[in-house]
Image 1: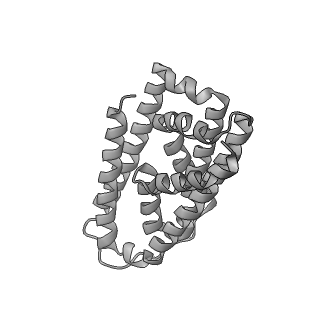
Image 2: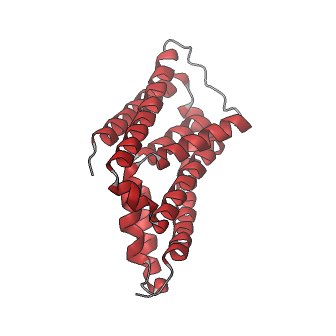
Image 3: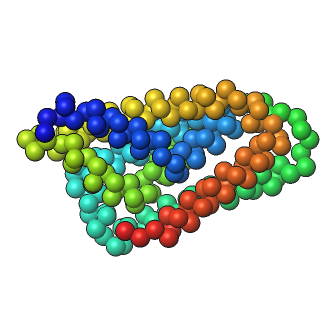
Length: 213
């Protein structure tokens, strides 16, 4: 298999994977709706940094060790589920605290350096603490790496391509959602969005906790 001829299939697969609902999509949508496009950028970059680390782990064989280890898989599952539950409960608390607030639109504020890194960290943790990401990387990349190509270097290049594609797609989504940010930040709408996104994140956390290999 020639790597150039396999690129179209790789790109299509990445686009389909990126469009599938999950923790990453929920996190980006909530962040873009409440913080606008600029607020969603660090979340997207954090998620993609985590994805790239998993890709390199897969190429180095570390992801296979994690996927094969009962203890490592359990730890990641517990951490990942716990963090999603934490984000979901935090969204619920935000919705509850906003109960009874006068219907005055909330103005979007610039993202501080601390807030930027916090959002980046949230995205990275959500991706890195997902044991299914390890299993996915092990199964996904070898399909597109020719036998005569170096595994690590080729995977690293393909992962960069995936990261670039997903950043473009996710930022386009964030921009589209961010354009309606003033509407999303209205107190009544924001409370509902917090309640819904909190429920989605909690449900995803419970799903991760209940997942087996």
